[in-house]
Length: 262
Image (cartoon, rainbow, N blue to C red):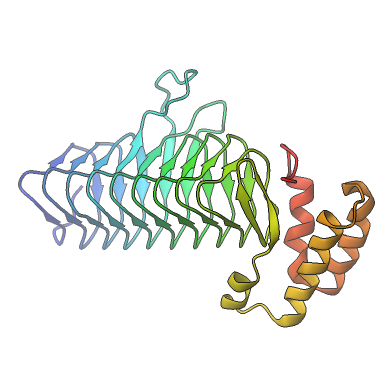
């Protein structure tokens, strides 16, 4: 079904069954599969491929040669009807690739709202990206990676499969992330190691001085005290009770499955 207000270039190929919303603009040489849905106001510039069971929300801008919903690169994948979901108001720049999930990983690759994926960024199978995130040029997420809200992954970064990147994290360019990165911190290097709290990012997002200091205190306990994780967790929990902004930091410690960067 194609809404009558959609504007579609004559060279675009739209398979039967695709759902194209109001005011969608599809440029030259785009290819849209029959199991896809594109939400109101989304723009596909040109040469964009949307395939598989893929839904794209409202008011996204997708630049040339991006590919969304194609078969993933996991050797276990055998053509199962897995899914890609892209939310609203994202900007997917040239040659971005977002691959569908695997049955073993839950069957879903998901990108939230208000994200910027720069040129050549790759989102592998079963990844989940939150809201307001940035993946800079050539950033690569291995399978099953989670990226929480407001995280920034620098250019040429590679994130190992199954890693988790916490909220408000800044990963510096050319880093190799092989373990989980707790919220609020700056990570840099190969392999990436912690380099303090992302104070500038937190200030830009309205965190108070008191909240930032509490986050710093939690960071120091984890990374500067010389004590084990189990030893410092009760003290971090106490900080989180007094300053709720620290709660995601504490919660992340329980989420971590690959161990924390050190």
